[in-house]
Length: 274
Image (cartoon, rainbow, N blue to C red; front, side, top):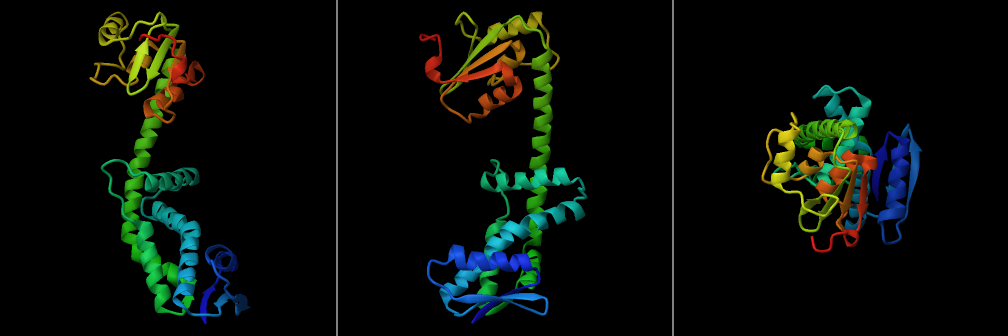
């Protein structure tokens, strides 16, 4: 017989539900009992497959109910953050960060370390104290958790700085008077800009415009103009044509121009020979 016991009633019942309703693909027999302020979940067998089920159920609870709390503790007590909303934003960012790490950033494999630890502990003992196992797991991954949280903070600061920049551009676009009522933006394999008449926006046109309309925010033109033509002209309306939803530069333009920007399929682009 295998058994896991808990001091937290809710966690015991979540574990029981996961174990007997979700992960097992075969019929398992077990029960849950309360004894002396602890809740015991019994499994009436002690096979390799049943221990695997137990390990997976424990992992599920650790990922869903413990890992974010551990990260919050690190943020509060090691990095001295105390704003609940800011901590919540960082924890949400951590999920995104693990799913899609920034290029060049190597993150500690926290989830894999937790899985390795739990599976070893579950197979070592037929009886597991969840609280003790959870505390030991935190101790085991703590160094990696510190490393991960430090890199999370770096990304959070970059994201906050990016948002401040976007807000600044948004105010600029909203308040700047422009002599260009409309700018067309076409994106297929690269981003190109067109005036209302259909002629392309090139580097020479941008330099001429900046010569007569100096812009303290734009000192020089990089090789890749990116979103700069739209920011320089700040048109009253920005028509974006592309079939590639999620393209970063176009999403940024939509974010900055807000109601001034309209997204249409590439087939709607009006200048067929452009």
